[in-house]
Image (cartoon, rainbow over all chains, first blue to last red; front, side, top):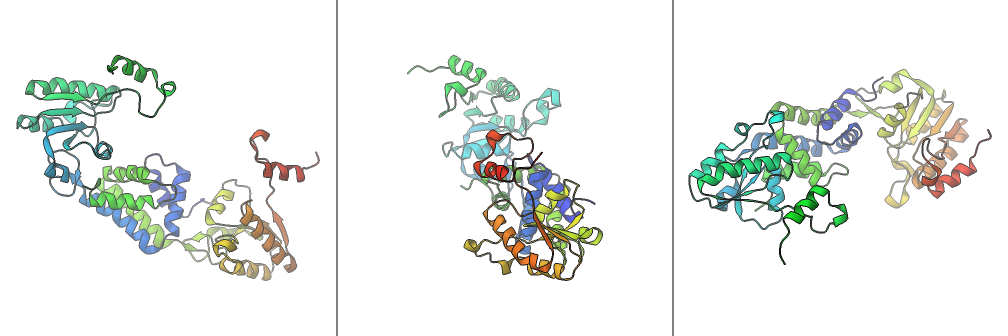
Length: 197
Length: 197
């Protein structure tokens, strides 16, 4: 006998597709849905359909948008562009409430081993934005891993000849952590890029 | 400016309602949905609606069912009934592939402080099953916490006069764990209920 009846098994399968969700967690989620009021469950399903149907990519920066142009591109200073790997990275930077410029979402980083070459990323669109003028600085905010660093270096080489300032987020020991817990690569970088007090 | 556009914010809100899911995890799930193929996302939403519409409670044991009577009640030995708090506990016991009897799902445990009195649980239905005869043993498999123990004790008192054997899952040190990690209550119980070798 199957452990789950078909509708529950199917729902567990769907939840298992979410990132980091194993069978046990998926089961917990599925049982929670079945325990919901019908209206609540329908609202949940509708939110999925609605998000999938309404969310598209901003024509300028490539971030998620409901309209052709996202709210950030409509309202903010376009002379400073922060380049990130994915839409979720925009959320991270927005959360610090400190950056007033615009973004450019690459939708990936250069990773030749996995077949991601520069032409598969939204790089041409970035070059076009810069060629139109008005951009003064491009901040590379790709992750400080191998692919992120390579992508930042590649873009710097590509964009500098266009007469734009290219910068990179600083790397070093995270605020509030301890030296003891910093990995060697981070500590090496923190030492190399030490600042005078 | 809101961090999320409306359809994404709404989807994150829905995911936050799942047990143990905070804002950050909900955001990850929502972004994953938006990254899915449209057909996949629609299948996900449909699985929710489908489960909510098709799953009901077995008229005999109270477990989840598609039909009036669940597959376990249709096919298994009804003379031994294992009493559990919730449908998910049935899954736990089914997983050991050792129990061949039937179940009874209480849909909660007695918890007067939170307003759960015996009449709010599926106890009347259990008594009816026993009164119809043919039941030889009732195994109390409620959790070994205060409410679970109280419910087991309450039911034992209620059911024994009906001429049925009432048993309780044994409590003690979990197999494969170490004495060092057993809490005092478990250790006390393991000592009290020690077995002769």
